[in-house]
Length: 238
Image (tube, rainbow, N blue to C red; front, side, top):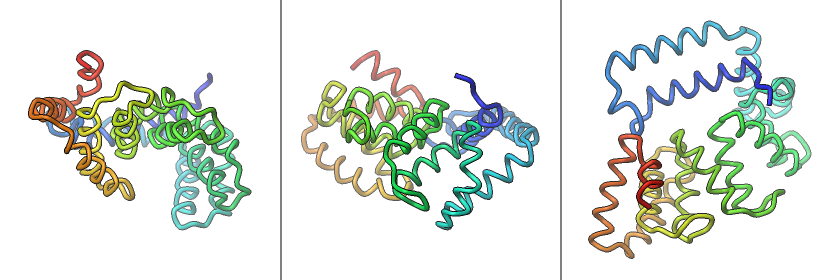
């Protein structure tokens, strides 16, 4: 698959900013020197982006956020056609919800998949949800787990929540309440809108099933999550 160069730059900048700002994965363990180098890299990347591309995506996102979907469509559609993952994801959300366009789940999933394959965390979480619920794709908990996990690796709380549900009920993964508790706990402590309250409820329900030994494992996995090797530990030990 050919990847749009501008899109790669946008995604790299986004991931660099997440590395600098994330309290779970990076900021507690990065040295000052590494943080400064990451910041310098972000500045260099931003300077290398074409001004037209920056203006287009900026105008499209601002219109999208203020619910001016006619302007958002005008700005985002050509960028999505050029392979910009951010534009693809937002345009897909518009088709999924019928915002400024005729509601079309098939087109929404197609755009979401393109953005997810480029590495957009929001798109990966949404694609996981499509597979989780069987919306315009065959229901597959295995695929849902795959995409939730890719998104969670980038720190998106709603992906942790979706993956937590899969581990709680053993859908697409082996049932494990210790892992689901840690995932729910992380999502519950996030400031992302919409998911934290539900995650807290699920965490508290799962907590009632945990033994003292389970709680010790929770501590180990929580520390692994904080330091950034949670998924590696899960793969190796669970």
